[in-house]
Image 1: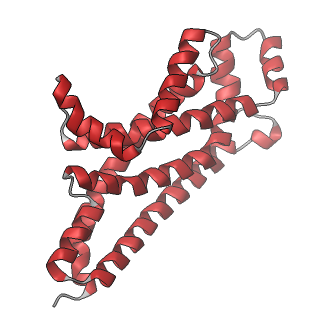
Image 2 (image 1 turned 90 degrees about the horizontal axis):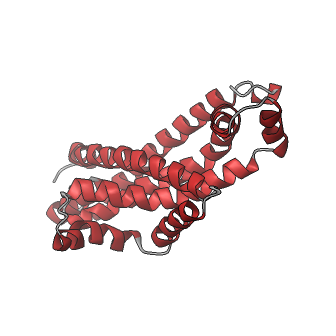
Length: 220
């Protein structure tokens, strides 16, 4: 009977797939959150409506159903996605809907004096957002964004239901073969925890870097 540590290499090969899923979905989520978050602040009603519809639709429905829709339902209307692409898109768009509210809240949290200062400097709206508002909003958005990223990491286990051999799928396969339930699920908990710890450390390091000088009034 294999020792617990002998099971680890098989699980770690699944962890690589989990990291790839998380990285890809994070890219989709960042783009979706940024566009939808700013879209909800737009002065144009159609843009606000479109962004709001996306956010409410993805927040108000199950991530698992969204995943099944992307993989099983879209091919019926002529859009075929491989399992990895479906997983990345479903997880990324789902997390991006929550991230959009983080972006919107962070932008609104920038003090009004900063907007007035940008106006006094005769900056255009685009320049104001780029040089004044967004650098400060990004720092405020990082902690909740990190939480969303960790939540997305854990949600990658859902893609095992569409045949992707990620960390949880590998654990289930190994458990069925060896019946070492306690050891295997214990290792899964440790691996997920370590991955989440890496995300937390990375987000905190990025937050320190981006917030340097903010307390002295600097934008960056």
